[in-house]
Amino acid sequence: MKEEEKTKKFNKKWLIAVVLIVVIAIALVIYSGILPTPTGLAAVTETNTNNPSVPPEQPKFTVTGNELLAKEVKEVLPYYEPVDLESGRYTIEVFIDKPIWIMLYDENNFNIWKNGGDAALRVGTGCCMQNRKTDSFSDKFDINEGEEGKYYLVIEDKEYIIGNKEKTTIKFKITQILKF
Image (cartoon, rainbow, N blue to C red; front, side, top):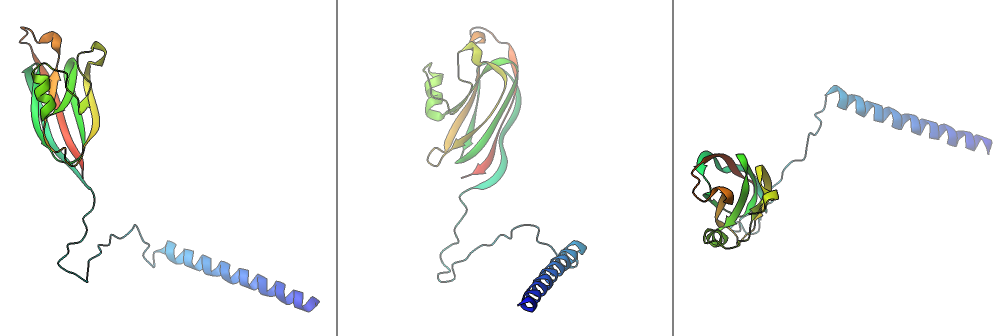
């Protein structure tokens, strides 16, 4: 019995020693650079081998970083700039030399705003409340499938509209960061 226990303990110690040596050897090989270490996941594209006429499935979105509109202008307010937007995620940045309101409208709501009505915003500070005025604005917004089309960046300050021809310096850009 005692000899059997000694053999089990001896075998257990040898097993632990062998496992430890193997782990150390693997670590040394990896650390020394003898074998290349994986640095990331490999991208794999599956193809339909049964029916080559069927195109491979496309991803749902693509990272773009396309600057669609970037300007610096000196204009009398209100100022608006049209831009065509496709489905995707965008950032908008506006910097101006005095506090104003910044709005982005789709074409229908732009026409409502232009005719003096209350229009629904896509993104912006909103209009006509003093506490919503700002001299810089940035935000992210989405244009979903079916909402693509012409949009208008509107920069307004109703206090300066009537008879004021003072020009305001405006810097703005709209960048598409994802394409749906």
